[in-house]
Amino acid sequence: MAGELIYAFRIMRLPLLDAGGAAIGRLDDIVIIPGARGASPRVLGFVATSQRRRIFVNAGRIATLDSDGARLRSWDVDLNPFKPRRGEVLVGRDLIDRRIGDEFVSDVALRPATDGKQHWWEPAKVRLARRSALRRRPSYRLIDVSDLPTLFHTGADTEMAAEAARLRDMHPSDVAGVVRALPLAQRKLLAEAMDDERLADLLEELPEAEQLRIIEGLDIERMVSVLEEMEYDDLADLLAEMPGEQRTRVLDAMDEEDADVMRRLLAYEEGTAGALMTPEIIILGANATVAEALAQIRDPEWLVSIAAQVFVVQPPYKPPTGQYLGVVHFQRLLREPPSMQLGRCVEQEPTVTPDILEREVSERLASYNLLSLGVCDEAGRLLGAITVDDVLDRALPTGWRQRRRVNSGSVSP
Image (cartoon, rainbow, N blue to C red; front, side, top):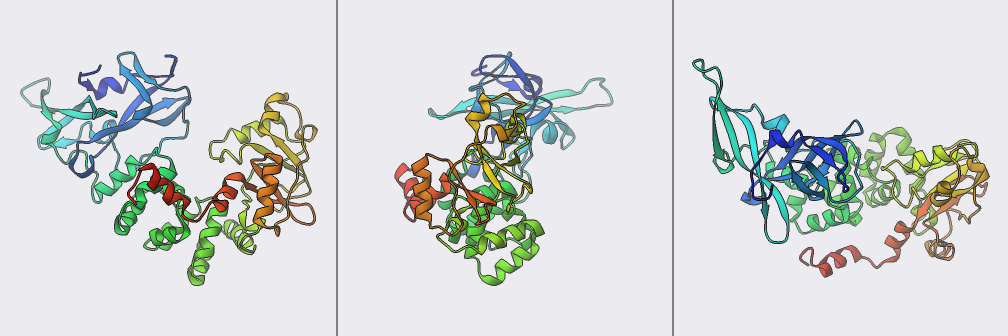
């Protein structure tokens, strides 16, 4: 359909196809965001139903859009449930049947666009309908999107909300690069427009001092809601940088169980294994099966470094656990029958105590080629684990994130 207009009603009935052309779902709606600084609105992506879930498919992942369907560029599909976000307009939900004077929107036509490097879809025409008592059928007329400049606006703070929507599928590290290029006032506006999970991801990619500046204008309820989405080790680093009074207010407002975890992590001395570790890891008992372990690993919410292995312990299964028994790596799980118990395939690997220094942690990870390292107390109870990405983050020079972005040309110095 290159060079043609394609109408929303037609798109919203197309099958979603994998890279090989097999149907894996159906398109239900089209997600559009307002243009940045006066530019035309564009299609951000599509809402689809696949495996009985409503999911989001970024427009950049669509290789072709034609009468056969929307075909993906690759085989992988993100099955996380679709959540509408501020700044996004859904054609079927928000535009169809919207009143415009004495007319209503009956359809929206899209056209392909390019700047020579990127290709995208943008709304080009709007079909308006008018009903009359003298006619059995409504009359229609087609007008340019430019004639309805506010059609794709979502209310106050539209520009920042739309900017937050544009960042939806970017890697948090790249989002941090975009945010760092903005003045502080705009950073705060963008943070307010982001949903809690996305803002938490962004904070984890920024130095603690910048994190504090971004969240300082948030009310305590919103702040806690965002902070509780952060990884425990990153949140501990941020809380350690907060003024004592603010840290106390945050901990008092947090979920009681999460607050207890944070107080334990904050008790460890800076520069030690305890200050580096996260208690949020996959822990199962020796009687759990390979199938149960794979089900845990399959959860997309786990970080790659965490999902690479399952730690096996005696009950209880929350840190501090019962006696630590060992670890089962993902590759081993793939080789064993689903019914096998983890106790039969557990491996013994070195652990560290929470008081050893960061340098020793790095040496253990490097010596044994590990993605993570268990942390146990003197009684052999599992307290958490240290992942290689957190060790690298500490090992690299201060400010490495900023220099990487400047050198790659992604932002201005």
